[in-house]
Length: 274
Image 1 (tube, one colour):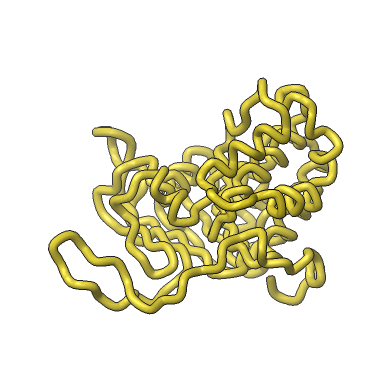
Image 2 (image 1 turned 90 degrees about the horizontal axis):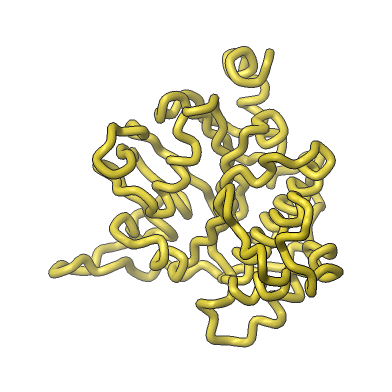
């Protein structure tokens, strides 16, 4: 994060996420030779065109990216393709054109499960917790890909979300909406992700809870994990963003820093209520 009203926040402890792999070389295509890693953003969905199944394209040459340590947000009107862009980056729809790269490695053909193994943590907007399980069981489920001792990571999640430690024996389905979102984010962090992707993390919560969730998101970014986030609360999201993307009908309409977009007269008039 750049120097701003948020500077100094967070614990700056990088151990909650995986250290990015050194770029000594890149994947070997089937039947091909290894090639140098392309330079570029840490995570990028580049010139993505596609939709669901055999339906019409929803994304049209859409590009979304985030660098190490950044918060990047995707905003725009309803039906703009924001969540579709996020799902495309995570591999939940087939791209007809474009590519996705993580830490220099092309992962366009990988399944969502394999992308998790590569270091992508994804929190969907809905159905993102196991309601009948306790908070602690939900976090343990997040560590399903781990073969090491994850107790330190769980302690870090509890430090980040103290209310979860207090309610760790309680069924997650009994929590408030904001607390459920904390469980969902905490479970994603249990994988020690290289990058964290959040689809509408503040949907349906009160303004006070929204502010608290944004504070926690800033703290996660401070640990060194890049965050790519879709948000309907555009003004508040851009206020904490290093980078912002405004999508309209599945296309990039405006791109800039969060501050630049907040101060852009066209963006303000069209998307932020003037």
